Structures are given as structure tokens and as C-alpha cells.
Length: 102
Image (cartoon, rainbow, N blue to C red; front, side, top):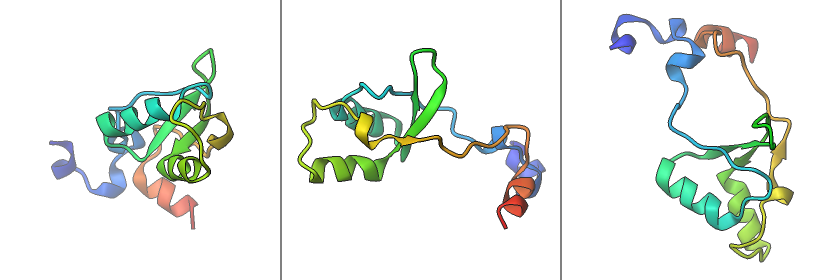
């Protein structure tokens, strides 16, 4: 296994990233989002446009906010999408990322 052979500082983003996920669009409903959270066991869902370009993310906390605001499960999630998320290059390693954030 790769983790036993390398220290965490040498692992790349690709080695560490979750590859088991799906995406949503701003038009998707809260019901669809709940089903995605249930199926994929993730905390943030990437949000893409019609050309599948990343435009934002939908954190789990935004779902709670929407429901507490009285939104219906059939309402679109657009108003709760976090636009322009921070991204990192996949070839960077863990040490590069943690040092740049200090």
C-alpha cells in the first residue's frame, strides 16, 4: 500500500483525495443532495455548470441552513452554493499544501 511506503509529507493530493463522489448543479434539489450525502458519505459536494466546470461547493452545513430557513426538499440549492471555492493543484504534496497555508 502506498501509505506504508511514503511519509504523509510525500503523498500528493491525488493520493489523498476522495475519488468516490458525484457533482450537482445549482438547479438540483435539496432532496437530491440528501441522497448524495447518504450514498457517498462526504461532507462537501462539488457544484458544476452545464459544461461541468467547477463553480462552487455545497457543504453539508448549508443543507442544514436551508432546512432551518424553511426550504422545501424540492427547492433548488442555488442560493446556498458557496461560489469560487479554493482549489489546489493535484500534483502538490501534503507538505507543500500545509506549508503554504501557514
